Length: 166
Image (cartoon, rainbow, N blue to C red; front, side, top):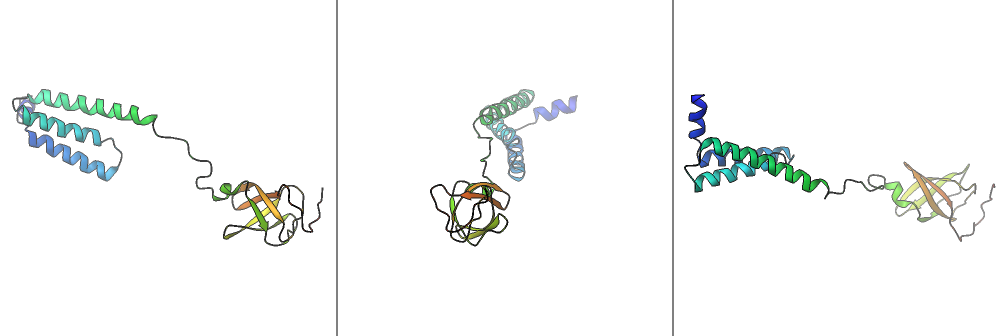
């Protein structure tokens, strides 16, 4: 117990600043933000110890613990509701971004499947309305399933020659 008392009474401002620097360096390496607040608390206690040198070692450790815990809890509560935790439905789903767009059939559809061009990429497509589009027909993307676009005849467009199987 005497060695603990001796250790606590020997704590100086530079000890706290060193602890703060180590915690902040570990925070930079870990990027968790949980070491950020104890690191800042250690720097704050070091500054307090520098301004008030007779500050008791036990009190400085207690203040460090309180400031660390309170700052971490306040950060967690304040940042919890602020960040939008929902992801956008088309994030990492490139084909879903094209739903609703009107595209042109690149070639004749066979057995309900054929190619369409979206921007500069050729996609495989499947018709969902029973039509049989031919090259040049305007189609609307109704759904996407991975790399397969599900298309239907675009509203208001006339088929150039594809027969309807409905």
